[in-house]
Length: 328
Image (cartoon, rainbow, N blue to C red; front, side):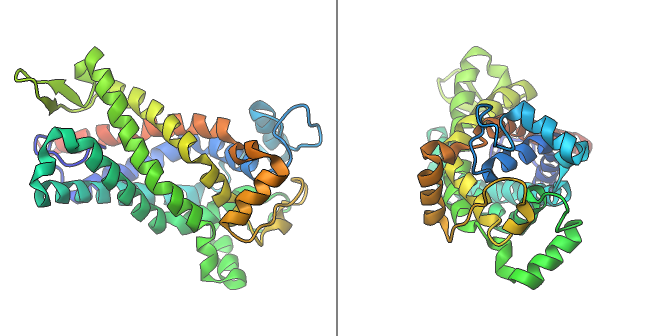
């Protein structure tokens, strides 16, 4: 996702949104097992460490084996349907709004057309686009977390029952539990992601210009060229890792807030976690699990962030290119 530029192959706003939806759906399916393990780690109060034998999950490999043994291999795709809905809605909303925002910035504020302002424009527009997409897709995230968090016997048999029971028993506001830490994290995460992407892309261009966003023109200025799949994979992976680590504590708080009132479905997973808001969530986590508790699940999260970022941007760029070719 590189934002509006007159030298790009021209696609409609709907086509940019469709490309984002396709990339989101494909990426989600491939990365879902890492997401399941990450959420299980985030919700466990006990240490994620092989030395603590009373912990249900003690490491990435052990957790994978335990989930398969206790719940079957399909459990690694628990919550996949709402996760796909989340990805499609988020991908469509994010890419579409980012293209619209950067285009409006280009036309409304002419001085921003200078390439030196591109990183700043992408940071602001990326943060706004991420916030819009998060609010639009958040109910799917709550349902996904509940489906992944529950043990056996299941409280929710599927997506439809989960939505119905949450609405009847907890009200519409339950679909937005954990929204506050999400909003706090999404703008800096999306903005930082794009800034990191720009940073690593510009450095990669010095080594292999044809694989990156920019090339040096004869007059010394920096100009745009289409990004290759290789450049997208490399820069997207590194940018995803850096951005995820930057805001991770808010992601953990979001998941813990989303299961408040749902602890009865987690018998057998260890000590229940209870809190009444973002600040208390962070405080209780640090008090009971030390500061490192805010980073539980970071390792599978970073693996997922690298894979997701690389695949998401690569598939998006290639989908846009395929749509452009179809017009010719």
